[in-house]
Image (cartoon, rainbow, N blue to C red; front, top):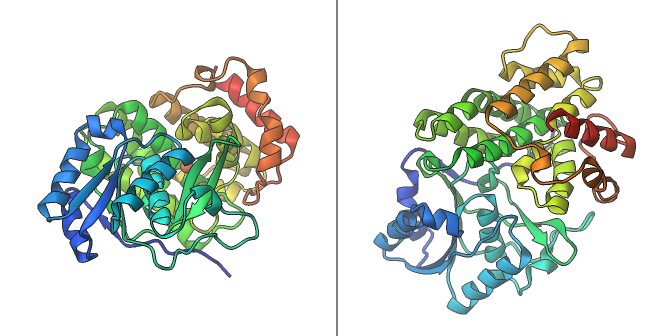
Length: 384
Ligand SMILES: [Fe+2]
């Protein structure tokens, strides 16, 4: 028996963002809030999207103060604006944090603020009424989180310094690779490695299904083929198209098995040391591969295939794949943890919080406190 969730409707293709106004008209929207961050606005992407919406005769309310990791107070602020202006739809443009902010705004349009009361709790049904939400359209400008096909929103709880989640179904994701053409190489690399981790964690999970392996395997191949190319030449449209598809497929692959060791560790060190999400979740990947290799060599073969590694023994698969992933990380200039953390001891200080807040439920190998310490310690040594 297998279990997975089906994602929402998606429009994929170069130039597809030009239809956003028409899509809103189809949903019956007359006045929408558009949320984004200052970086995307400065890159000129927001002006284009606003133009497409205006051309369709739809009134716009702008919220341009989205921040990385979607802090709870920005969602509450944008939600209050949307409620005050009585908008009838939400459009989010940007990276994962802006898309998550848009999801939070959508929840607050139909539910009383603040967003904090809708955080998911273990063993409890989602809080808030999600049966009658206003239309929500997401336009990702990075090829990474795949937030446009996941009904979960991530938010930073600034009071407790933790990452929390809430549920918000999406009406439509518009995936236009053209929106990623101007991304700097550093953002391309970190978001691309986030997508890689989603697919990696899906296929190496203790609960994979036929779809997670299909989408995850394809996503891994696309990242291995195109990430370095897109980092070297940001205007390489074929590479951008491949990566954007990879990010969406990777996200679809993780809608049943769910994330495990890389994101479990990454979720904590990201918050503890203010590290961008894609760097935090991939920082320990080479050592995690070696750690899980004895437990699931056959699953690692799916990952290895993306790098052209075949006919390798169970004893060798961990080391060979770990080196291939490390080479990719070095080739795209993924920053080492020492760029954000002063000493190895500072990094290891996060271990108790990792064990306290993460359950490693979907890991193919049980994880002890000693294992986490070992993985972090070796990861620090490997790239510093
Ligand atoms: Fe992620």
